[in-house]
Image (cartoon, rainbow, N blue to C red; front, side, top):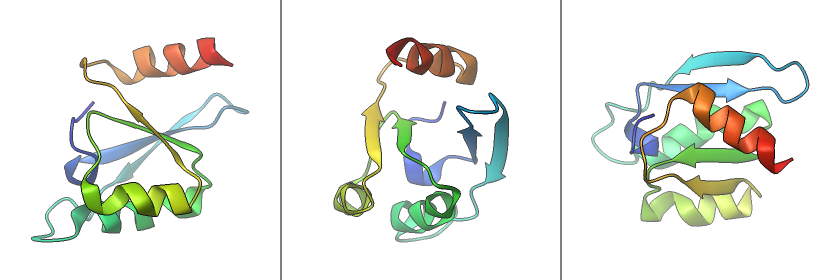
Length: 91
């Protein structure tokens, strides 16, 4: 897990119905400015309802709130499997 949402290398999208993970390249990671908002535009069309990251930049918090996407801050480094297991325990 990358601690920076907008600068991560890729997004791991977990489908709660099929239990499958899809990886999407974050083409916004190298942007000089606005990587966070651009990253939101990459994941939002995938009907994302929760995003887990070590941190969310100021520019995207209101954007994600407007899109009704829950932000989950995870300060401890975890693997994708560990995050999925934690989220599944909450259901």
